[in-house]
Length: 36
Image (cartoon, rainbow, N blue to C red; front, side, top):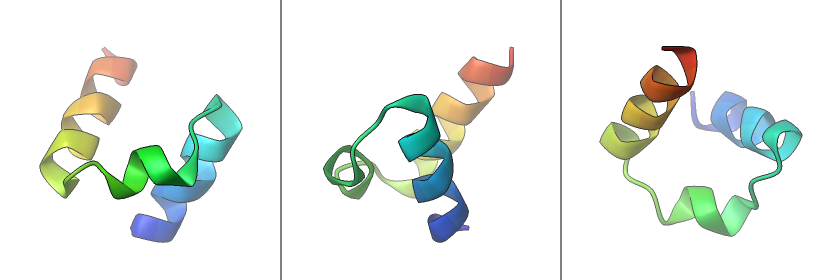
């Protein structure tokens, strides 16, 4: 899950440091917002 999120984030322009600062809940919320 985490590795997939990192790959997605890189493709969308996020740095790995940004992801490391996010909890899994925040990441899921962000993905949900993006999909909406």
